[in-house]
Amino acid sequence: MNRHITLKQFRYFLAVAESASVASAARMINIAQSAVTKSIQELEESLGVQLFERTAKGMVLTQEGHRFQASARKVMSAVAEASRIDYRHEEELSGNLTIGVTSLVAGYYLADLFSRFQRSHPSVKISVIEDSAQFLEHLLINGEVDLAIMVSNVLGDPQALVVETLTSSPNRVWLAASHPLAARPELTLAECAEHEQVVLETDRVEGVLRAVWARYGLRPQITLRTSSLEAVRSLVGVGAGIAILPDFLYRPWTLDAEHVEVRTLRDAVPSIDIGLVWRRGSHINPVTSEFIHLAREKSRSGRGR
View (cartoon, one colour):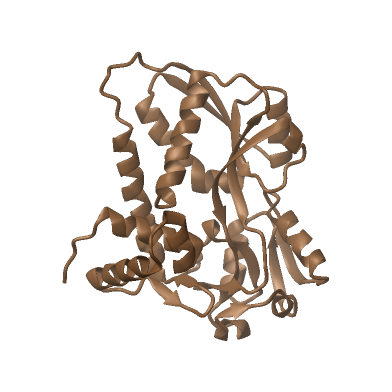
């Protein structure tokens, strides 16, 4: 079995994993669709595993695919970090940086950025404030935090803030393998509305979906509203309901080892954007500017571009 994997294959794989489409990935990285297909096939042959489930409407990561995605992101992040090494012996960056973050995003985006920035700039003192999106906007506008990492689709005062999107995560249906809807490769919102749902009430994710339900004139049957992602994951895993959530939160296994599967939505549903947010017109000091630069590079490496 050939285990030699190229950086190009990592990039193409990550592009397909994010867009859930070979065609979209090809457009994203500006190459022929056939080249992406061939690269993914060769990668799967080299690894000896199937990374994607091919459906009529998209490419869905298998359990092995999700594991490989985590490793691929680390590889591309390391490559991006290595390319940033400055051999000119510049003066060491110092100062303070205060970052706001919501609880949901903290577990998925903060740790890697925090550690990489701290390694590169050990003289910078970083403070992190975790709170609700609404309160973080208040702190940003008052100048009490330098920037925030948060769901940026729906801001309370968008005119007062600047948003730079780091990633867009498509919403999909989470459900147990034993759920009646699991037999279908893709689902409509109308089909989802006929079944009990578990709703995650945090970081304005629910607000995005609430607008979608209203637009389609549907009223979902809600079993539970909770701010705990693990509660949602566990309840879905045991078949107590389905959930519609962004892919960046997906893990195939719950804490109770129950399997959670995902299905693509046929209807148009907005993705959930994670972005850097700072006050419009504020002075961007060198420390904040460097953190923004690092976040941009991590975002590019995560997308495989």
